[in-house]
Each structure stands twice: as structure tokens, then as C-alpha cells.
Amino acid sequence: MSSVQGRRRNYYAYRDCMAMKGIWLRLVPLGKRQEFFTKTLIEWVFSNLGDNHNVGDTTWATLFAITIWWGWKWRCINVFNGTGKCRD
Image (tube, rainbow, N blue to C red; front, top):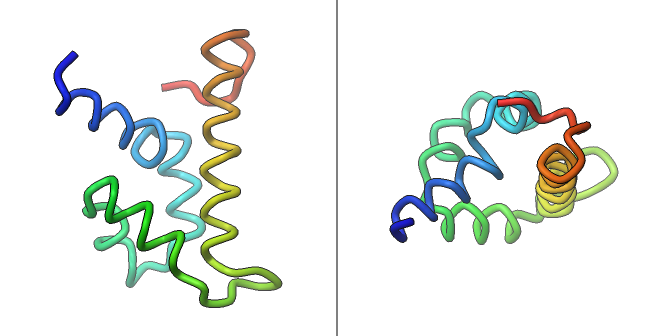
């Protein structure tokens, strides 16, 4: 696998697979979606983890991190157990 394919796979698992994209579309405000979905992986992670504006009772950085964690957990369950919710 080339490094470009590896980077695309990372994007896909965290941001662009149908299950995760559906979640992000519910969480990311319409006016921020273009920027959210076009940053490089490093820019995307660091800008979102550094965004401390309030979202309800928490910050965007916390919501972002928890969403990434749940997405990764669902994918691992799907890959290793075949019982997860992330069907591509």
C-alpha cells in the first residue's frame, strides 16, 4: 500500500465512510462543512482538537474526539466481530 492510499484509508475510516459522514453532517454546521471535509488529515485533526467553542455542555474538541473514538470502535467491532453498525 502506498503512503497516499494509507492516508486516504485514514480519511475514509474517520471522516468519509457513509456511517461517519452521516454523523458529521449532523454535527458540523452547514457553513463549516466545506472546510471540515477538505482539510488534510493533520489539519483536520489539529484544527478540530484545538476548537474549544462550546457545543451544548461541552466543547467542540471534546465532541470531535468522542465521535472519532466511537467511529473507530464501531469499525473495529465490524471488522473483528462482523456485528458492527458501520457498513460501507
